[in-house]
Image 1 (cartoon, helix red, strand yellow):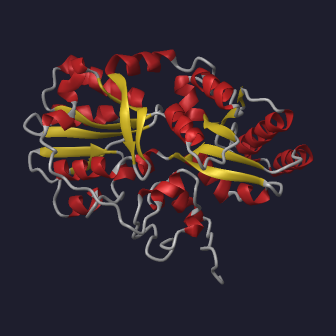
Image 2 (cartoon, rainbow, N blue to C red):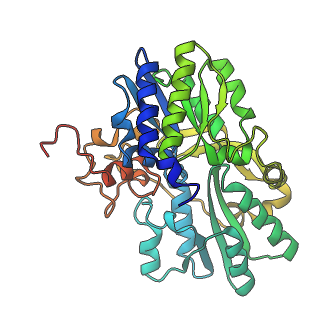
Length: 367
């Protein structure tokens, strides 16, 4: 396929790996922020082909995985109401809450509908004026502009029965929190190309300068990632700490200013909880006061819920790169894609799901 196969060329991949081996003179630890990048690295075995000492640390860049348990429990409480139609992207339906998931609730009669864009939820609200329609709005800067446009559209239509349950998170504050943790091992980052396509990379420049870490904006195909790793290692070997753009075919420094304008018009920055990690300051988005009428958390009484993580799930350690899925005692035992304990085993971008799909065995296994 034109514009795709060339980024999967095995001969070019071998040449880039040879150049990487010739460049690296010491061990380096690099975090890829995005879960989509993690899946490519693991599925293609790139992490196992890297020169000895070059270690990839898998970061918290899966929007499904970092959605806090409290938000999921709130979504399920709303879905259980007979007057509510809960709409969501399909990858959220099997993410476990405290006691169940949205797919199980739908099987028991709840009106939970998969949509492919938040504006689809607006259309559902228009078609069902007698029901409250809630869209579960999760994700990073990539998906937030579409949610902002849905709010603006619903506002123009004067829809009284449409709202968002918002759990949007931001990448730069998460990177800062990781770098400031006492046990941080990250020496360079691969930044998510799709986030930077929206927001640009100027917000990463102060991080690179302050913490003296190279940051390379990278795509998602095998050659994107190998080249991004090579660019990061070149900086590390030279003692540089800059933001570089590998994903030149899709990303500009300024990003998509129209999407940014929609975001700033509808949302404002707030503290946000991350599943398994905790609350990070200024790491999320919430609806501005003028659009608070579309905030499901304010429209409905969602108090009194008690959220409890499964004690065997180490999702927080997985999401921060402190542990690998193969180091989890529940991995491929109690926790599988059919019966997940945590979101990283469910999501198509989850690290645990990536390791499971690639057939990675638990540490100490005789298989």
